[in-house]
Length: 382
Image (tube, rainbow, N blue to C red; front, side, top):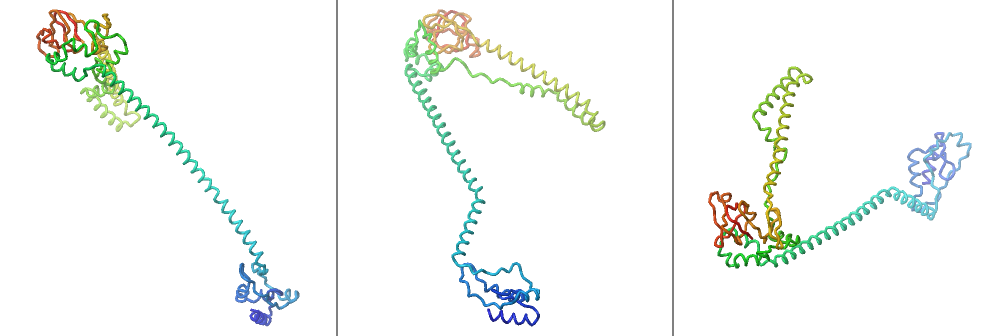
């Protein structure tokens, strides 16, 4: 390297330019050209490598540098031949600074991860609370069902006869089956009823009988909504013709006279049709409500029933299995039952069978059907 520097310096001196070697005069280095600069940069010590021995520089005076007009590069910084310990300390400082910068740029990621962990914890707690509530609700439901089942079993054990056997007895009208259970007297014993005093008037016992054997009601027909009446009103032939005429008039009026003035005729017809539909549907709906109310009042028949040894008035819908009901001429049989006793007791079953024939009832044919009229005599039924 020293040989190259000396040769380059001699060549530049002959051309009227001077170059300062590394360590002394810089005139030779500045005027040596790109090749010399590359060679000189290759001779510089690098970090982590042993520094080469110092080069011998050719001294050049300050007057010579100013006289020759030296071209000095601002980015050509010579090495200082720093020791390894100092270079190692600088490298450690650079690593610390880079680590702090990376930590600063990853703060947001760490915060997002912390938020996501917090969301997971909250979600897990919410799921645990929901599972506990569902488990508690299921336990309460199972406990209630178990209680109801146990209660129903205990109530059913009070009555040796079940509902299916009663239905079969009433459906077949078989007096032999009735005699097998002991007749009317045996049936009343199975139902925990007294033929003279009836059942107890205690509300709890009446409710228990309804729970086991059912209530003396029937499923009611679903009420028609007002929109059903509107739909039925729209099916009128006259209104359909008027709506078609209104649509035709509206379209022709808009085409000929424009939207601003052409909608009067068709719009007026549409308004009249809608008004008629609304009035008709409202009137029919109100009439339907009135008829339904009248039917409910008509079906809610008040009868006499023996409870606790006393005759009390009750609705036909409040009767329970085991009630003793006295009957006379003109009364309606409130429910399916069995004749206990009677005098010249006759029933008109035309409403059930369609035959206008009076049927006499006695101990040989004691079965009574709901809805029939008492045509003659009087008696009592279970």
